[in-house]
Image 1 (tube, rainbow, N blue to C red):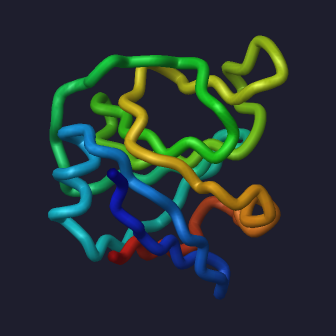
Image 2: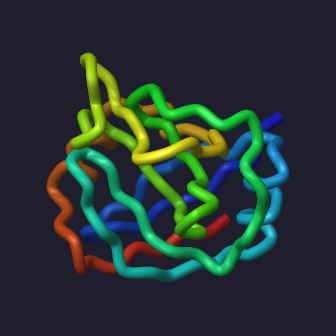
Image 3: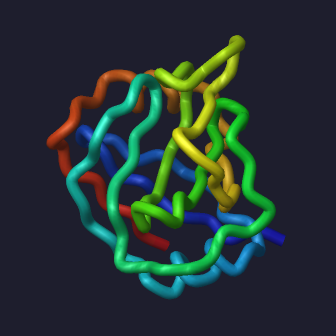
Length: 124
C-alpha cells in the first residue's frame, strides 16, 4: 500500500508515492511542507521538520527514488548521477531510508531543470 503525494516545483506538479516506512509515515503526517532546494548532481534535497532513525539504510538507489537522510533531516529526490556515483546509477552521500518513488520517468526532466535556491512544496 502506498500514499500519493504531489511535488510542486518550477511551476509543475509531479505525482509520487510514499511507502509504508516509519520515515514516510512521519513525513506524510508533517505535510504540507515548503522548503528551498539544494542540488547535488542529479539529486534534490532539502531539510524538513522530521527526525527519525535510519531504516534499512542504502546508498545505491534507483532513479526516481525518494529517500530520507537522517543526518540532515533531509528529503531527497534522486533522478540521475550524483558526485558519489560509482556506476550508472544515483548514489547517496550516506545511508538513506527509501521512502517512495516517482513512477513517471517523464517527470525527471522537470527535476533536471531545477537549480539550488528554488522553492519546493510537498502536499497530499
